[in-house]
Amino acid sequence: MKVGIIGAGSVGSAAAFSLMMTGVAHKVVLIDMNEKKAMAEAMDIAHAAPFTSAGKVKAGNYADLDGCEVVIVTAGANQKPGETRIDLLSRNVAIFEAIIPQVAKYAPNSILLIAANPADIMVEIALKLSGFPKERVIGSGTVLDTSRFRTLLAFYLGVSTKSVHADVLGEHGDSEVLVWSSAEAGTLSLEEYAQSVGKVLDDAKKAEINDGVVNAAYSIIEGKGATCYGIAGALTQICRAINNNDYSILTISSHHDEVEGVKDVCLSLPTVINRRGIFHVIMPKLSVSEHQQLHASAMKMKDFSNQALALLPK
Image (tube, rainbow, N blue to C red; front, side, top):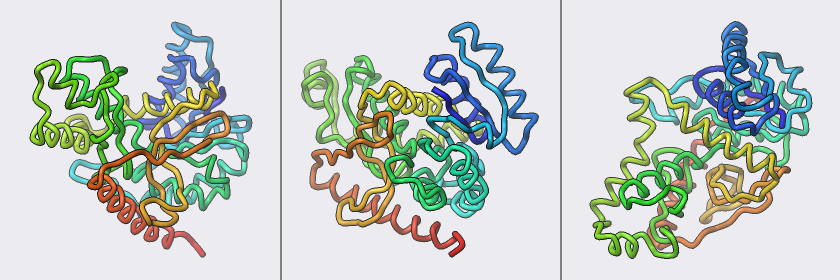
């Protein structure tokens, strides 16, 4: 699999490293306005690649995207301590105006995978600027948030993260919806499993876990300035699903004709992914309160998407 990555900052370089070390990509092209940075990152990763794979990574330009199955866009303004993803909106729309038409020109058959924040809104902007079908413009969405949710649950319940089935939907951000009602450990509901091992999973504990998921990025940014490894893992998992054509179900972000009564909105829902991108979108079973939360998240994303689209030239 050949993957292009636009942006050689902390997220782009970590994603390139992850793709190479896992063998998901056999070739990675790193593109950045700072050519020396892209070259240095590519060189450093290339020196590590022989330890696990025979893949190749290089710095390049947009023309080098020819033949890419996936182009990951991480380029964008950095989220600063105390700043929400929405605060990045106007700056990143301008950046995408310069990037996305170039990707569409040189990799017209690729799948666009958006990781720049605010992720859901930037998917909408990329869809508009690229002219690609919506099945080939996706965002990392809540794949990482879902991982955070499962990790916290697994740690508390004392089981492997692979044995916990729980999703986060909606915005990749403050209005995201943790789906407790259908979450399971094995074939038991979380409450049933917690009771069986003598753990308390009451409203207070759920609120604590909810806070840990929603505010994880803010805690990481406050401590080290940026998040990179978790999102790199999420991007690698999405690329693996595309490359293997294995019809994985992941909570990626994409454009939906309607969600909870809100029309034409980008957010995350469980989605079947194959080599062509989106194969099928699943509307999961939700409680009444979760339906309400998802509606509120969709309304928020619709509002900000309208603001973002208004920034584009007519």
